[in-house]
Length: 255
Image (cartoon, rainbow, N blue to C red; front, side, top):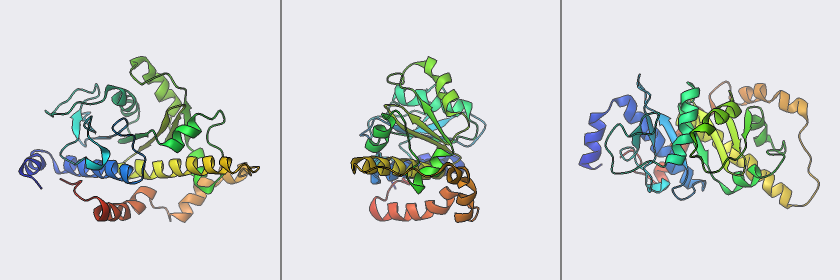
């Protein structure tokens, strides 16, 4: 760890540093799973504490090279509250600030432009109940119509309305969004969202008649998920293993 990284670690609270490490890991895992879009999408996390401050990616840095110390701390208006040589993508924080301001439980907001996610977001029917992976998503999914690159402050109320209390939001013709109490929760939710879209695109490409899952099964999926995970939070259940994988393949995020 470089001396500058050590000085930042010593300058922030242990809770903020832990949030930085978790978010940096989330960025690198997003790249590892192939969901990044060069530098043109975003994951944000609230800094623990009374201030409404957030961490987001330094604009121009690739996801697989982001570190805890390189993340930019901003307020709800996207203004830097700690000096950084990097800027923040204004389109990115329009979406994130809207969700953070409206959802106290959404400590992490994750937004991707994955190929499969964008492909399904362009389909009129949206996500279909074609796979086991899709069922948990469909039980907590909203849709938001495309309004162009997210630069318009006036779009924020509609984003908030369309997300509602859901975990998942499909941004039509644009991509996917998940929220979570932690970066781990938002990432694992995104895994199932992306997997559902990938399976749908591949099933459609096969050309055969598709068999949707019946509504009564969808209605009972939340109870089934609780049984499978034994009541554990899926993010907490999977996260330690994801970090071990990241440590093997792309260490250094905690610097």
